[in-house]
Image 1 (tube, rainbow, N blue to C red):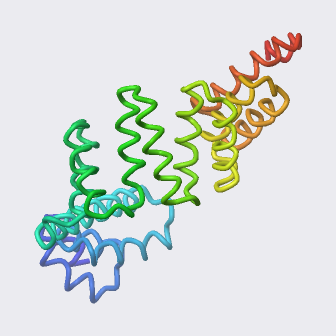
Image 2: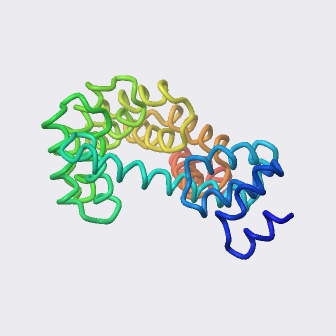
Length: 245
């Protein structure tokens, strides 16, 4: 009780030894976080979350602890290895998140120049290129990623998506099917695969994709798109009642 009272008044460091003696994972995790010890806080908050998995306070503080820990580790990486490929990758990803695509590309390409085998970097560059609708350049990056990581469902999905935008429907279907096989029933993949199959004239298979999407995700924008695509298929087939539904 003394530890909780100290923590409630903002004396987080002073609260820690009392909360340790009291064996309170949840309050101790918060106190450790507010004392600048996110690594220790994560362990305690994870333990508390295991007992109360849907507690909003625990979810909030655990998210903050992971965020602070990530910042600490990123700073350690930059200080100890300023010229490493991983530092370039981390910097590029941060700049991409902050809306600075040109600078992000510069750092990501520097990371690849240092270590051409880094997974995920071609994927990140391809995403940046898609922001400018540069589908041809994005295709090269996504294809390079699939060669580095043939088991990556995300890379296969992105390659299939960009091939569809380039009008190469048959190739797109192949990559999207491969993505669905690597990571089955992902709603994003099912939506793009259904669209490509519909464009190729295989309406029956397209219908199956959209129905599977709705089964996996009953609400939200992806489900809405699937319903709209189904309505078009049914209207074309003369199934007016189904289209209206």
